[in-house]
Image (cartoon, one colour):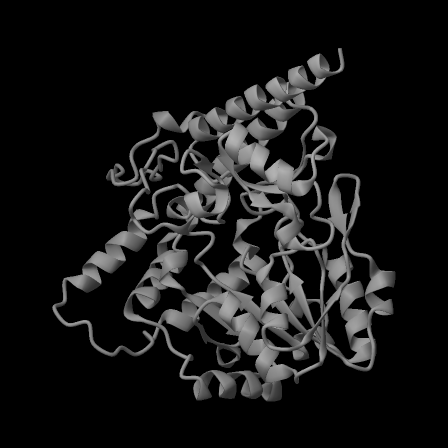
Amino acid sequence: MKNNSEKSETNSTPLSGAVKLYNFDEIIDRKNTNAVKVDRCKALFGTENVIPMWVADMDFRTPDFILEAIKKRIEHPILGYSMTPQNFYPLLVNWILDHHKWEVKREWVSFLPGIVPGLSFAVQSLTNIEDEIIVQPPVYYPFFHVIENNKRKLVYNQLLESEGIFKFNFEDFENKITSKTKLFILCNPHNPGGRVWTKDELSKLADICQKHQITVVSDEIHADMVLPGKTPHTPFASVSEWAKENTVTFMAPSKVFNMPGLISSSYIIPNDNLRKKFADFLEASEMNTGNIFSYEATIACYEQGENWRLQMLEYVQGNIEFLRDYLKTNIPQIIPMIPEASFLVWLNCKSLGMETEELHKFFSLEAGIGLNKGTVFGPGGEYHLRLNVACPRTVLEKALKQLKSAVSGKLMLAVSSKR
């Protein structure tokens, strides 16, 4: 892969007719910007001296077209109450059709102030207290919070790990269903494993849900982050007519275009009755509109973002390959689950011989790397950590060298103690 240090800077102006090249090797200091990823390290890891590779945002410069769209809006001296721009939803609908081959009607779509809040809204509007909701750990941990904090019963259908990837346990999924099971929250593509579920896999899940009349909420925030050469993303709602009529889908440009602080997401609900339940709850909560900057940034993404998106994914793919090769050669005790989507890598560290708490401390205090503890993702997270590779290659290389040194030191100490 071409070294991106040879590429033009993000803010450079391309020659007429040329494809603009972006620089993902740029190192940007995020300290003292209230960045969760950086400024919470002391509290989480016991030290500020870690390379933060945990929170799922990128250390790449937010694309220039987003920043320029915001700057242009700021040129107007009044930041008053604003309406949704007319082209906001048509652009989203066209993007979904172009990228995911799903024909969405305009009336199915509306604004959502963040996907995690959306999960909570779905739990509150579509279920009752003490209803059962199925999730598939290890999975994005806010799934658990929105269920338990709203006094619903959390039910685990743990994923199987086979041939280096996660797979559904269909038999266990159906066995976990009772008369109280009302909702299933799906992570599609999966976080932290990076699986892009196939249409066949999703269809089998849909058949089980149809048999037991379970509504599905599909978190598809990583849909636009399928890596080069991998199986295309399939929206769950597109696999059958029943799935279309019984699924609440959440999508967002915030992850793929590195603008999570702007909190711009959307929900897609084809079924009129289901959509009304959800929309009425948002309206009653006064949570059904966005803000000036989220609208302008999203429009910029869908109008101008494809070139940046493809270059970013190519760079991330290069980082994943670098990580895979480095670990295989230098730290074979750590086995990465190679993602098909996103910039998150699930690390199996069981061969290091440490329990999860000790493992987490070892990475932060000995190796100087701040990662997500595997157990926060639920059952199946033991002996694992989640690593974010959306950073300049030099930063990833530095982190891995520190890890190699720490592991080597630990192994030498273990050998000497046995003498």
